[in-house]
Image (cartoon, rainbow, N blue to C red; front, side, top):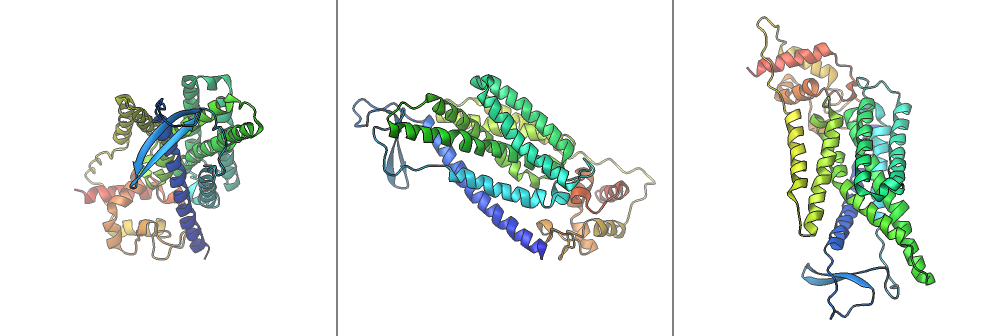
Length: 397
């Protein structure tokens, strides 16, 4: 019953996370685009004093006229729309999923004894420290004198992220390291909204209501954090789906792959922002696709070495016995492994024909990446992996 409840909570939480994430990212991307495409008001335009830019657009059969004030309108409107709950609910639902999957079921998804034999409480505490500590370090960098120079800030943040990526991949399973790295970036993003952007907007409104001059530092800081958020977005999205791809998180150099994917995502976003201005450079795309090409080459499957003459090849029955013992607790019509109410990806090993049909998948997951059994919950041995290796290579001759 517990597994059934966990699957429903996972489904509903993930659904809510995707919905709210789309709302947040959509609003964020739109306002970045809008800000970058504003035109100086025409002298003949009938606009309120203080308008710094305007934009005309057509969508859904209607015309829209957007205006941005340099500071604030002469009079605040009765209805002022805020954009904050998209960010907050995205983080809340993401935190819920992280706690449900990677902390409550840490022994399955977070801890890999082959990487570091951590206890469940220790692993969870490290995860919390990573997420909270990442925000503190990033926020202090932005507020320090280093944050006044974007190039210096970018370099220091890059070094910090490289160190975090390396450390996480030495402590957690690959998928656990990737997801915590993404959760840390996501927390930085929502922290920017809650601790910098929204307070700045509140001060702007309060200043207007009180008839005082607003502090320009709020606008400067909010602009900086908004730009950071738009460059964090694509890396976070890619990292959040990476747990489906063992070729990435189970690679021996997974920490480098994690950084490479993050830089590639940020570079692609840089190109889109440049395109808003009508001046896209090919350099960000060269960086992005160059990194993706390097990663693809690094993780590409290598030709299986030939089997030496005289090597004893296990029978299908012998390999199926290994698969039944080590994999069928999850991959069965009715999984017996706690936390699973149904077989992952619908793959089952009920018979030898199932094992034969899934030979490529078994070889890739159990031998090449060693991502399965997940967390090696069933204690598969190197000898058993070797037996699968020899059997598969023999079947390909």
